[in-house]
Amino acid sequence: MPTVHLLAFFRMAAATAVCVWAMSGVAGEFHETGGAAIQGFDVVAYHVDGRAVKGSGEITGEYKGSIFHFKSAAHRDQFLAAPEKYAPQYGGFCAFGTARGYKAVTSPEAFSIVDGKLYLNYDAKVQAMWLQDKPGYIRKADENWSTVAKTTKVLR
Image 1 (cartoon, rainbow, N blue to C red):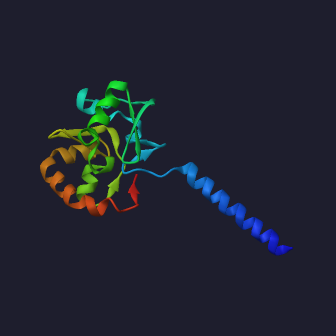
Image 2: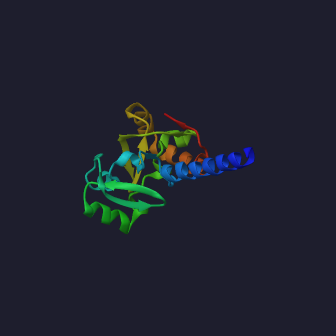
Image 3: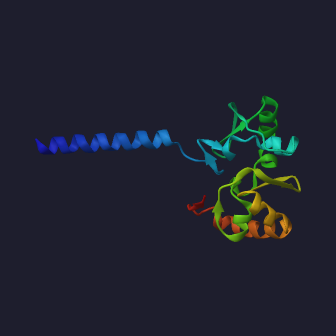
């Protein structure tokens, strides 16, 4: 009798674990908050409007396993036609942090477009340091990204 209860317990625990895993989803290649890449900001708007614009949870597109939000269907369509053009560098983690060898969250308003690529930074203070030597930090971040991308610790 106790063996039957133990078996039922393990079956229920396994089913619960599968349900929790399925509900949490599997993150894609980009920094995500609440299931949205780049905190739900429209990555096309950075390029087209030159500013951070919150996207709509009703206008979305998927790229490399991450869900991106857009302010309009036109922006979504632009993104899906050429996602590598609009997607942020270093998975949307802080470009300055990546140059220094670690992952850090970003502030949507702390961004730069350099040679047509989107780079995000932790905050305005970090961005001020980043702006002092963008080419140097980009070079270093490009060198570091393959290692930094594998780390699970993210500075907040």
